[in-house]
Image (cartoon, rainbow, N blue to C red):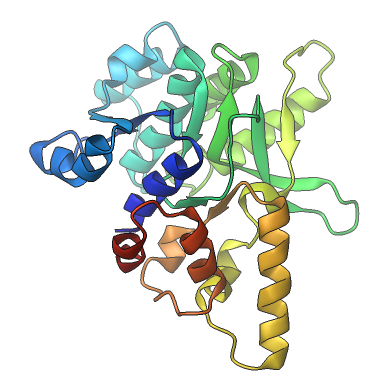
Length: 270
């Protein structure tokens, strides 16, 4: 269960963190049992079922959700659960502030020094400017105006038939819009891809492979040094990597060794 290692690596570098896992399946006797090694070690972690109406209250998400429940919004072909997750993370950050993170990351250092930050997934090779952002890891203060803009965009432009339209593409188009707006005063930072997405989804398998020859070994060592130097957390793109075996000597095997708490059992879950 790679999600376990995300939690473990988070606590490795944030031992005093308060982690809320928003999940219907984890807010159960089985979930409590899974988390028991952490709670017994005095880490503060709590699973809780999402209460959409409560979290969306007093935002534009509330009216959108009400129309969805009435059948006036087509959920589309993309998983409704995925799109509700896109909206829920925005509303939770807006209401409470803090760090939102998907459960397919390996945390490599403290995130507590980041503030009002979102990561670029890709950059334009000609200009060096970001070309797409991603909403898999975000750090924002409570009631940050950019989060409100994200929520408004979701409610006004929801499309359940286009993958990413209400997630990575949403945050990308809103940030692009407000960046040239004279009336927007929200301060925020766009981090480079190396911060959270040092390898694109199409190449994530390269992090799981052991060196095959001297040339590959040099690449592995170089990439590992870059990640250790520049990366806060590595997104594993679980949709693409969940069935890939972690090979001994791979970049992922090195990173998990430095980010584990219950190391022997942790590596087995990957």
